[in-house]
Structures are given as structure tokens and as C-alpha cells.
Length: 352
Image 1 (cartoon, rainbow, N blue to C red):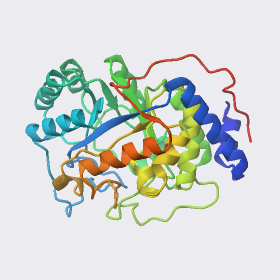
Image 2: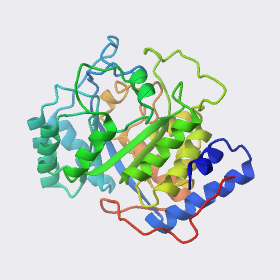
Image 3: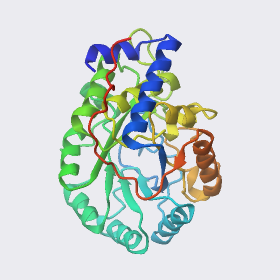
């Protein structure tokens, strides 16, 4: 699949042709990662953040947001809920919170790994290499750091610098992999100013980075941000629709056949009725039910009306499993780590 093929699919509107794309992505998913849908229990451990991102409600300048950090006891309780629900992984996610000390979190990770068989995924933004090394030694299995867009000028627009001399996120991903983490990244679809050409480069970068996990979701800005009230440009700019997000997801599956790819919370937020099922039918093999305690869920407002923010952990679990069963898929067991496979025969797709 070359850039011309990818660009053609991104701009395709014919429903019959797109049905062929969905079918191909689903066949490749089945052939490389199987029918199981793995459940990752999401725990949003803090909504503090030092960044000034131009779209996210957690940005440090949002003084109207009540801030929180979960305690070790609360996090361990959520991990125990994940075990009770039969999950193989928990995802510890937060804003870029410098108040979370590396040593404290290492202790939390060690306790989860000592008392459960769960895999631990971290999604904590940009952290110092020594911190990443400490958490890996404590037992963390995976690290997710989205590069959001490969267009560096666009990235600077949505992620204003903080005075840090850290490398671009794409370079940081190599360091994360060198530490032995399963490495995940991803993008937002429909960022104001995002072109089909840059989105094509994003997709090819997924393949070139040989990612273990790929996260794709639509651009959903918070109204209390610089870009929150900005209308999306027309003409050659990518729309932040569920259809476009599903195109990118399907193409990601074709380019990265054995990666773990979730039907994201953002996709379910944009399309509450069918977002999850469309994602699973078009290449995804992971869902991430929210296990965050009820008193914190609404405060982790990266964008408004986030899917699952008003539901209990039990309700989120029920919806996820019901969706899986309705599609005739099975619920995954174990940690669901990436298993590298060889390219599938007949997986080539040409321009539409």
C-alpha cells in the first residue's frame, strides 16, 4: 500500500467500495489477531497536567477544573475490579502530572504486579528517561505516547512548548521501545489544519515504527481551550467524523496487521450508538472500559460528554461485553500482548 492508495481511500465516498475496505480490514484482523476482543481496564489516576495543549480540558490553564489524584489504595482497588471482571490489563492514565513521583508510582506498579497477573500499561505523557526506566523495572509492561500528528508545525500549534528540551515524541518512542516496553502511539483525526497528505504520512509512520499498539480517535476539543471554539476548515482538510476515523482505523489494521488497535473512547463519544461496534467491525480488537471511581470520572474531562463518564464500572463492563457478544466475537483472556505474525496472503489493497 503506497501513499497514493492511502490518499485515495481517505477521500473515498462510495459506500460499496468502503464496504470492501471494512471487510478487508476485518479479515486481516481475524487472520492476525483472531476473534478475541481484549478488555483493558482504564484507570484515570490524575487530572493534573503541566501542559498548555490547545484542545484538552486538562490543560494547566483551566482553572475551572477541580483537580484530583487517586491514592494508592484507590488504584489497587480498581486493579482488583479489573481482575474480578476478567480483564488481562489495566491502563494507568493521567495528564502530564509532575506531582506523581516516579518512586511512588513504581511502588503502585509493584503492588499490582505482585498481587495480580495483570499487564500494566502506562499513559502518562512525556516523562524523564530515568522515570520510564524505573517504572519498567517495577514491572510496567507497556507505554502509550501518542504523537498526535507527524506534521511538526501542526504539532507545535496544538502542543505549545513548555520550555523543555525533550525530543519530539516520535524520537521518544524509540527510547521507550529500547527500555523493553510494548510501545503504543496514535493520532487524532480531524485536527484543524490536518491535511490528507499529513494523515497519509501518519499512517505510513505507524507501519515504519512497527508499533505494538495503535490508538486512533477523532479530534474532540474541549470548549475551554484555545481551539475549542474553532470551526474546522473545509477544502482538503480532514473532517473529525466517525467515518473518517474508521477509515484511518481500517487502514491502520491493513498496514499494521498484528498490532493491538482499540475502538477508542473518543470514537464511542462521537458516535454513542455504533462507535464501538463500527470500530470492532473495521479492524479493532480492543475495548477499554472505564474503571475510574465515579467521583473522579467526570473530572477527567479531556473533552465534554466523554463516553462512560456518567456510568459505573459495572455498567461500562456490561456495555463492552454486550457489544462483543452482539458481534459474535469472544472476550479475550490473558494479557493480550502483541504476537508478531507474517503478512497475510491476499492482504494487498489497491487504490479505490
